Length: 338
Ligand code: HAH
Image 1 (cartoon, rainbow, N blue to C red):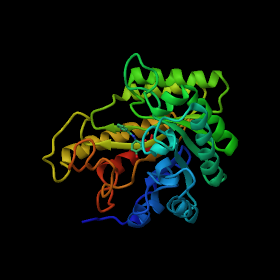
Image 2: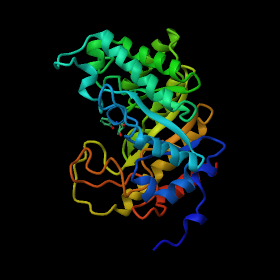
Image 3: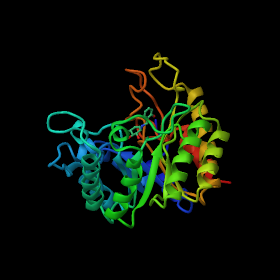
Image 4: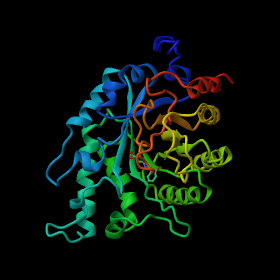
């Protein structure tokens, strides 16, 4: 059915080459199954899971870097940049990190010294190969009236765990750009909490260089003007912005429908409209946004298959399950034309 070959489609990395890098989250399977597509359109990758705490540091005295190293090799082979994801997070982190040998909560000093060894080892290993790290992921609360999300990091080490993570990362790789990364980043209330956190870090001279906007968006949310306001607000702190995990779900978050076996044309058109608007906005702010990474590349694989509705497929990317361009791809190209 494809009437145009990959070689004939303009490369996203070239179309936007003067504005920002174009990235994709990858895993050990997609670097094979999506190899040609990735090599053609993308000049940056992020490991979807393979550099997370549980993947590289399953036990206190054991690091496992084989899979992460393969992703680094893939990037090097194709001349791609690598964003690191993620050093400190409340999810996908093994319990041993927070516990004593007999399973009780460890003390603050133990936790911070484990954090330091972890960051030194991981960021140190990829020094010069990973140009930007998501140092802390999702530490801000989704609840009104609460700045930080309750977590074992916060419980044990107190709010200083965030500043410490940045300090350790900066010591481990002084040239890496260090990011605070979060979702619901364009919600006006959460935006203010993220702003408050990062402003506080900047005022204390914590080495933080940017804010990562995850950008897990949908055909319905967030409003374009809320995204614009978030970009402006974050940029006013004098930090860089990276769009770190872009995808555009065909379902709004509270839509529980499970009837679709293929994406309806009408939803694909709405998705395309949204993608065009987003890329126009990214271009408009390309003075502050220097990387746009999709949380995947094509619809044959997405973390949104089965999340948040079990058993439901999603089609959030500009390329379909066969890696052919969708309406979204063509409208992203429109966004590059003024
Ligand atoms: C992200 N959380 C994580 O940063 C990433 O590491 C993971 O692979 C997928 C998504 C986003 C998220 C969300 O959209 C809703 C609820 C919790 C977390």
